Length: 190
Image (cartoon, rainbow, N blue to C red; front, side):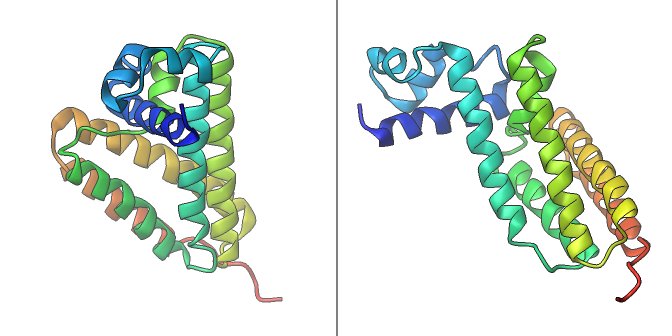
């Protein structure tokens, strides 16, 4: 089994988490959709399903954070527009099939290491968003609060959009977030 095949299994776990949640992201489902041989999953993930899921969460977060880091230097409105546009595109492109892998684990994995990891990734995400807002000129305390609001509102809007099979709520939430970003207090020039 090559590293590429392992990466394919992890990618499939990310996708299955986003589509179906923790329980449905079984070894069997990952194998069936990735085409990997059965024995390979136990070779690459001797810690079992949770080892695969944790790696999938980490890969999902790394990709998301790298995409967000490209927004450094953008103003608050641009950050909100880019952040929400990526989610909107994913919803529309997949016909509302895909949500957030991290939220899926939070909602459906029991207490323990995976839920703790999801919590840490959400904290890291909020921190990154706040740092980007500060780099874009927003006051630190306002950036921290708005980053939490931005992440929570978008995660909720994604979940509602998937359930309703409609982009309407997502667009309403996005418009409110853009308005909120426009009104954020800016740092005093140094």
